[in-house]
Image (cartoon, rainbow, N blue to C red; front, side):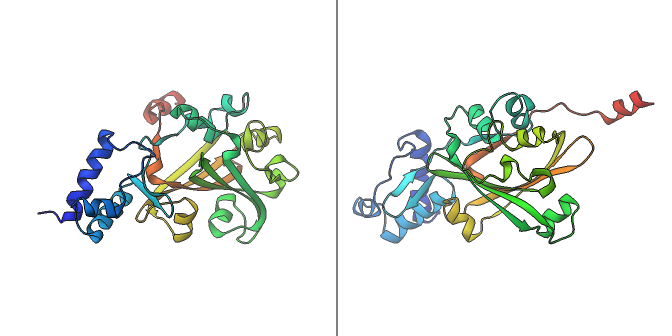
Length: 264
């Protein structure tokens, strides 16, 4: 038999999924459920903690326990980097995700801090630089409304971006088309990318910055961006709240055997 807190959590979760408690709606105060005979204070508290860990609710001082938006953002894979979006238009990657998800956005929902730093080992290796060489770090926090969704820090060689909008700390994208358009205008047109993803527990700092519930995980992204001749023009590390994104990839399936036949 499941413990009483688990039974209560399951009942509340079912009501959330059925729409009895809508996104943004506050769940009953713990004392109200205790008075209604749902269990002791510790039982109700344990049930609410379980709902937090499952990403169904968020708790904060002064706001109580509130049902979270259950439809995650669609985090596009290949399509978010379509050159027509940023080269010919003004749809930078995080905005492309919002458009694909049918969600609103404001450009100032992306903040940034730009600094010149010594390259950590991972960054130096990606850029083919000695560890400790200086690079520009462009650190962003992206929010949906008041709620952070992810962080992204891009690292660049100074000779690629010195004097460009990429190193301008003004909040928001780096001008029309964002960073990829800046690189394009500087003669570094992006050609291909490598993305690596892995899930892990959030650090204490990440949990605070992204306003994560206890027990929530993050998805870490490593993105290496190349020009056609193989020059690395950006290496980025992103930290995404795992429950706030659905990752989507749509691509042509390769056939290396057919490609080799065509070369022969």
